[in-house]
Length: 120
Image 1 (spheres, helix red, strand yellow):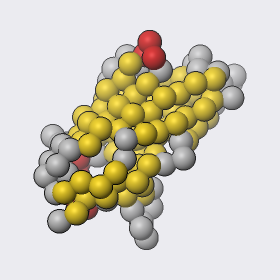
Image 2 (tube, one colour; image 1 turned 135 degrees about the horizontal axis):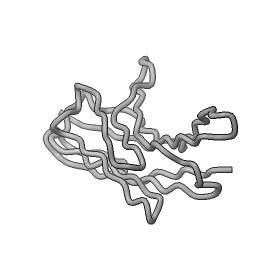
Image 3 (cartoon, helix red, strand yellow; image 1 turned 30 degrees about the vertical axis):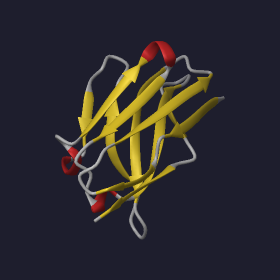
Image 4 (cartoon, helix red, strand yellow; image 1 turned 90 degrees about the vertical axis):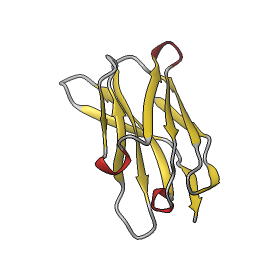
């Protein structure tokens, strides 16, 4: 099993910054990509940023230049540095870990989510 635990959410004014952290533990071998998703009220969960074990990254267009994902492979931790936050960034942010299992299937593991609220 894989456990995913996020931390670092909170309330911030527009233009401010927050840093989210996510620790992955358990059967962490074959964990390849890790990332952050978010879900605002009444909306579907969407990808924010993802990073592979080799450090390749991909971002949603809406966060490029403001949010930065990074990863500490030795500590099995992924971070999301969020700068120049906007009210539309308000959402529950979920950490995701993708693990490749026998047969090549990818299994998703999710954290419990952390609330980020940006006031105008």
